Length: 373
Image 1 (cartoon, one colour):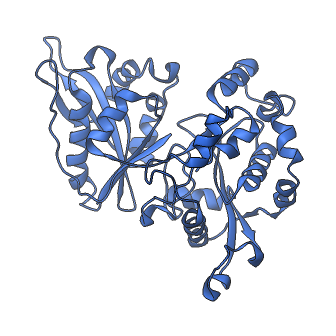
Image 2 (tube, helix red, strand yellow; image 1 turned 45 degrees about the vertical axis):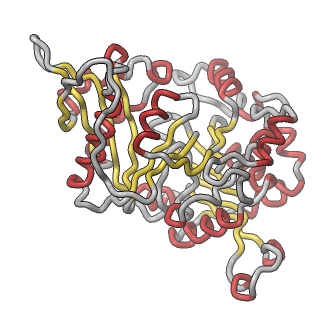
């Protein structure tokens, strides 16, 4: 998945530039009960019919206090809702999500109209506190990327999703998910040929496994993440998330479906703006540790720190940095309402730390999806 952000930048209005016919839609706030059926229809084919937006409307509107907008077109029989978008304030960042357009209304500039509307209205809705905005999407969603990059031209980085989609799909089909839930007799790692063996054969990862500790302090979590992301190797193309190590692995024919792929496709996020380096490991979403969601995860024991020894510090570290704690990894284990899966968000110093985090996630849940930033 990729993170896109306008950085730096204020919230402004952008008008649509290309459309096949004039846009006659009006924008208004979403009303959950009134618009539920329309959102169901708009999202019917998204993610194979498993889109989170219809399921999460009430939660997003009431619990998360998100700004949800719909675009409706007037007809002789009444207004028809043909698009939706949402935004949530996190610290001073506007996180944009859920841009959806009805299939029959696409290629009319409606996506850009919704993006422009959420940008302009968010300024007043959140009291002018949003100074920049970001979102997350997948590279194969080219239509969304065109709209997103029109407003947010800077790619902050790429996050690896593990296992690969074909391996995940095969496993979930075999267990009959989501109607059936996974059991210890049929785990995700056990279903991928050689994955569990690779992880368990990493002696360093095995030694690290009992050293993970539950975090209790959001500020320490943020410090650990800043340290880890600042020390990750620079990308060969700053800001694009394309690392030389990943390119070499791909040229060598490395597959991301096995356990080794989780390490080989580890992207650096050292190009992240300083304000985001302390945010929790990205898992197709973005939260600061001190947010309501972040504090809830810490309170429930789902955030782990792997502290290192001073010998693990980077060579040439100053005496002041040597006196500070050294961190090897941060792991967030949570249940994604949107994705309906348990997730493991991982920020790690090296491949063995990633392996140990995957083993810890495996001991926590038989069925999980890992996001490695």
